[in-house]
Image (cartoon, rainbow, N blue to C red):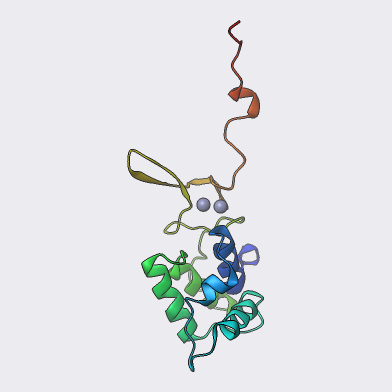
Length: 149
Ligand SMILES: [Zn+2]
Ligand SMILES: [Zn+2]
């Protein structure tokens, strides 16, 4: 079960890609201690995504602030759980994630809006969200039964 979960770094990459953010855009949100130039933060982020370096508390804190204000959306609870799991702590239930975009219960995909209401994705499989699922309606159903002359 846990083997299908992404690593913390892969989780961040999937969420970044789902929001079409570049490494530099997310790096601009990341703080380090001591502070380093953007290019170095981008390198750090690449290393984190590749699982080559652990995510420091300072980086986690700055990412969580970004999630708070919505500049980089992910579920902080999921990130913390994945870090725990990567460290071998399997004491709590693994988070439910979409296998394609890694969205989760409190970090749904934006699927448009209706009457001013924000519409999020929903689960279509245990680990697949509606935003990533092939269209519900088969292509044939979209065709009119008969065409007016
Ligand atoms: Zn998805
Ligand atoms: Zn989704």
